[in-house]
Image 1 (cartoon, rainbow, N blue to C red):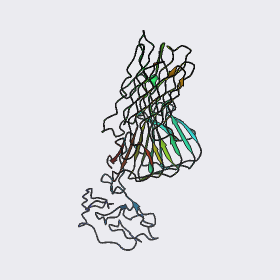
Image 2 (image 1 turned 90 degrees about the vertical axis):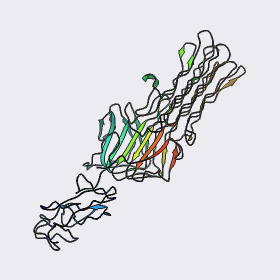
Image 3 (image 1 turned 60 degrees about the vertical axis):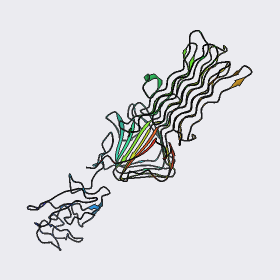
Length: 455
């Protein structure tokens, strides 16, 4: 918001929504049309004679409470709201927020409307006709504005996290679904095929001489995973502890999905697969993000896969752990939520019994409970196995331990996956007042932070 004229001393400082200006060297104010560069722009300060060709680029009458800039005149002096104040780097424009992980393109001019269901594969970074591109290992959609219409589902899956970056605003009235599906992780989440990391659950245990199998433990992220269920009897085994949660300083950088649950176990080796980790989704906008009443972002963990039965009591499998929820990161000067932000852990699965497969744990999907249920143990005349633990979510962000069993057929249930993380970054640094959330706003897995900065 400055006039760039010879002999004008300009002093910039961040003062709330404006900058200060030394006007002592400015020439007299021109009220009518400007035949030369006008140092004090007025509302009607462009006439037909020169069409504004010599008019000032910006308004020099800057005050500390300014919240708008005046761009070059094209017939009249118009103002642009600046929620983050004037730019210190370039006083002729509004300040831009600095986004996490990948940069917003503030020169973007395209307005993207998603009005029908679309499937996005972040491994190839492709999805219909959407303008997607890989940047820093993240599959990114960049535009001026992005709108997802009501009743539309944007299904996202693949190896890379997913980000939507808008120079102006993002409106979500449909659903961005980045949840895991059983063993299949969400975008950027982990599966058993990737090996074991610190946030992944531990597989069930078995001894070569016994028949007892402990359950796999749950994965962790912003909540810890549940312990695998103990198995008693011949060759008894204690279930492994669930994966620990990340520290409280995690703020969505780097952008990553959830861990996978520990697999079940049977006599012959690894049994049922643990649930995949929930996906990683980042929405960043230069002005605002609105999650409408019919909208949502879903990044829940996958439920542990049900254990396999056998006709032999020493070959049935134990329960598998649930995957942890993933990460939802929303950052804009203002974030309004009336819909759902959902990143619970998946439920652990139940052990099998002879002739009957174990019940799988529930995924942390759009329709799930705030704490997805674990698999329910079957029973027979010979006895029953251990049940799976509930996934972490709502206020209880840690996964529940798998069920212990100390009689025939000796196998433990899988632990529930820990809750994922919901992170908002806004100008005020406070949580949204509305919406439905798992993890709950009151929990330590929901983190409300200030913007990283402006430029």
